[in-house]
Length: 463
Image 1: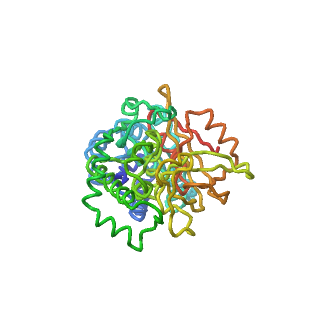
Image 2: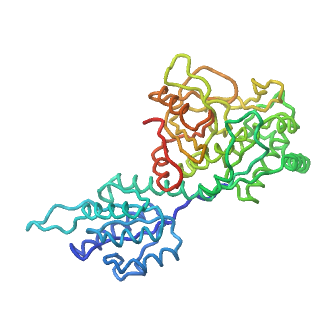
Image 3: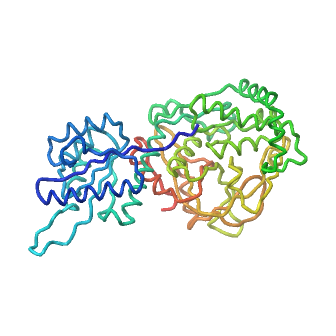
């Protein structure tokens, strides 16, 4: 099941023997007050150093030891009056964690011309040392703790760290093998484990279908009651109820597997055998699952990773969905159809009260498994993790869902400022037609996250 995406931040205030020590302590407390206000999960060093400020190089060893004991996920080194750059560099390097650099905006010189602190200057010195030592770091521009830049920069950093952290811990459940004629979803499972720590756990298709049928028989009366409840949002008139029952059982089997095996996302074969074995309604079960955890259709393991990354960056801000780029808008040169998605029903246009089902129009011989709805309007972020020949890239960009011609299945028309530029990057990169999407603005966080994910580079489709 989807893990709680929290980050424990180690806060290591930095000072120096020059400049005002008393003012540095004041700045330190202002920082802690703001972190408490923002409800950040953090560990301070008050119990390690008498004044809670690193001011000498010999402070490195006790701080590193303490933070390792606390099992922090990231390091924050606010420069409270200047900065002991050698200590900053070695603490960060020995911890080997994503590091955030920031210092409070310096006050005007006093009447006699002296200054209480030169935090910005100290940040420049420390950034050089972090770079020299190969530390992966971000920084927030020099500002006060009350400025929006501080809140937004801290939030972006924490979400970027969360994204990197959960990619390394992720486990994908694979239902069925790759569809034979989908060469674009061929991937190197061994490399994913070696380079990113991503595990792929295959499930036998025969066992999966058997478990669905057993659960459908056991819970038949409960599923029938669910179908008849007024809250059931799917229009199943003309649909075989037995298939819908099995679809609800499929939902619960996937949740049971996820709980038992600690699965973060699913890669599912999609057709033909699953649909033929379950019958009508399979899209209903997938829609329920998609509300709580991602499903990448058509055996796309890289697609499942894309969704894990995107949902981690969004920090629980709505479910992702998994469409594909298909056709350009017939009249709008900067709009493209996102179609055929594994998508949660909550993402439908709010005007749709009941969602009908129909057979896939390009595979009309199959049962009525596809939900028929268009997506709600709003800003969206696109994400695609992919790679070949040992090189991996994260492509991302932002657009908005707009009105467009009606088509079949789940769909939406996305508009971007320059679609031809997107198209060229998608064609020339390591990307297929599949992508992961989520409502909101997450591309900057995804770009930041790649700083902390070895073996992964970023490409912005919208820049």
